[in-house]
Image 1 (cartoon, rainbow, N blue to C red):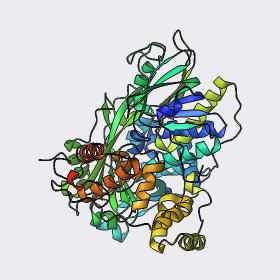
Image 2 (cartoon, rainbow, N blue to C red):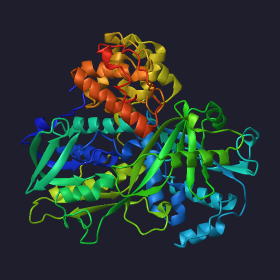
Image 3 (cartoon, rainbow, N blue to C red):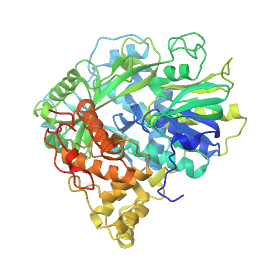
Image 4 (cartoon, rainbow, N blue to C red):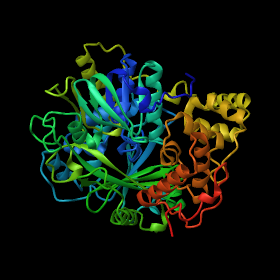
Length: 599
């Protein structure tokens, strides 16, 4: 297996195979278990009814953080775990996870002290913005809990700097500054974890667009969502890592209770509940520049904690926290867009904001443990592992992952892996705590080493210096073999999205499990979230995908229409009614307004 060939398989290749563990759900938590079990040499299969990380794992605030606000709820162990995991990710995936300087605007001195105390003791306080004293106490504790593996400075509080007086509202008198982290491309980290897992255990396999239809005895029935074909595999254990779909998946797998309303929980009802978080990506150079690379972390008038920070040339804003019943039926509602824009106007009154600034929206459902809390923000972000024992129809145990957050995926995966190993009667032989992820391995640690690495890329591949730098930022040290591969093909930039090349898009199609055009456009590249997908770029990528994946004209037409619809309706991308001619081997007659679903 080459350094760049990830072992993605279609269900037909799985027929009749046996795996020690089958993992249902290929989001970050499921893939974390897949990676950890494979490191223990356990042969695993991971499947997902959609694409890898297509659910909540592709829709976080893209923050890797300890959860400062969870301190008010007394979640000290969660914050300690999350800050430790944040620090580990900064070490293990430095090509994708980087420090994020964060500023908290403060308008009062004593505000929120009593509210914080009431929250800590489980009472619902009247809403009041937190002041300097409460924030200072919280940040001191935050630094203390996050001291393990720490690589960033502690917090500080000061009078509002001169540069920020024109940014925040006039009432702001102080700013608190602390450090968390952000991740540029969470979907890519998921793919890297899959690649690392299959390097350590070549008998492990991953299949997307592959739905589990049921479990009887030790046999799982899988359906290829592309062809409709059914196949069967056998397993010794099952891991349910389907997040907000946990209860539904448990019912399909024959968990205790056998239905969504009373499933796998000793007759006590569902285990998870979902709240959706909507985010906006703005084209707003004035705000982006004024933030100076920092995140602003603040409270809206209604008490909701919001964030805004520069993101790959744009500005990312989040988020809402709204209970939902069906994780398959969600979208960013116009009222949510207006809410977030109004919050920005409240915090940055000297700047103007409108829907014209919004270039992309996305939403995910947080898989939270079932709770009776009055407000979504009060629901614990902690996680647990539960076991459904074999029953009359199922001979193998189901290990379920309840709750959790992006930052703590490794710790949750470690807990789940330990339970699977116990079920299998096998020992843990290694820890993932200090193992680099994907292109984070041997990443140059300083400017001089980075310069040498880039020079090596340029010399060995023939790509230009700027291109080498872009590939290094995108793929870490894996950029070297990829640059050599791309250079051999000429590495011609896309006409309508020159940050990527024809050969790079072809590589992504062929070797990262792409089955649909939206897999490529929305999750394998950063073009969509940066607001860079135009009709022309979409048509060009559709042409390359059609050639790489062998789509005929009808299939290409269908894929283009479906991706355009998803971009427009789910992500708020403004696609014009006039589609230009494709710029690669593809039937240009397909590039019509009817293909894009517009009249």
